Length: 256
Image 1 (cartoon, one colour):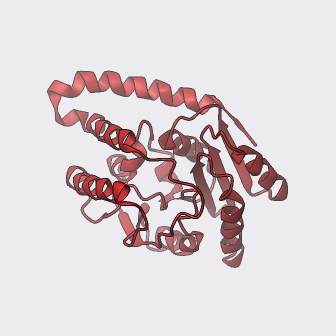
Image 2 (cartoon, one colour):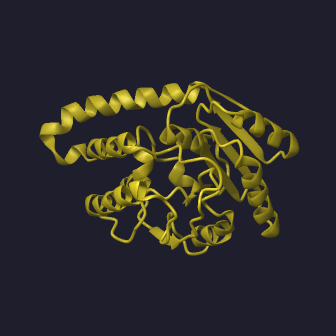
Image 3 (cartoon, helix red, strand yellow):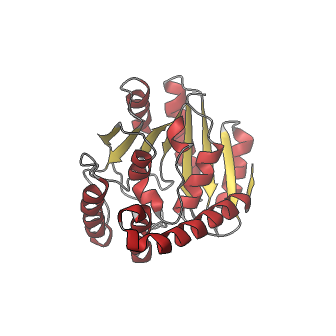
């Protein structure tokens, strides 16, 4: 299989049919074999019903349903666990990420030899309450991670070699630092592609908020625990707790 598309989502029933139709159109136009793995992160709307209906219409659709809301990192982790494609693409479910970017992302992995390619939404359509924290976050992440060429660590639209997603553990709020996790796992060729950012068509942002922004910084501290010996024992305890939590939420779901 050429491509697995992993789509974490929370209350996106309106977007899903249009998103899948768009992905399918791009895949067929480029002759890709593919699967789309929708990870329903405890939605309270009809998102799961929509996924079940899409599954009856296409064998390329797969679904994972969490029994409650865990967050984007657990959703990605479980999607990565199920993915079978040579290249794994992640994108958000809100139609702000364009599936038209997929062919070039795939080419950069398979022909240019990148381990991971992160999108850069150079022109954004988000409110200031989101763009200002994003700029602060990215400046910090570049300095801490040593990955100087990335402008948008937290962009949902990314492409990975299969080996990358099978060798990283995404928990807590660590989806914001996936390039850093990949680098620490030995995947050094990390690139960036400017991607189109579209205005949200339905509803409002679901995977956000200041709490998760600050929690992301705490998770980054945990990931850097070996650099500060005095912090190491506390961080190790926290890390073990998070890993146990990780195994729990991947058991606590149903699939189609």
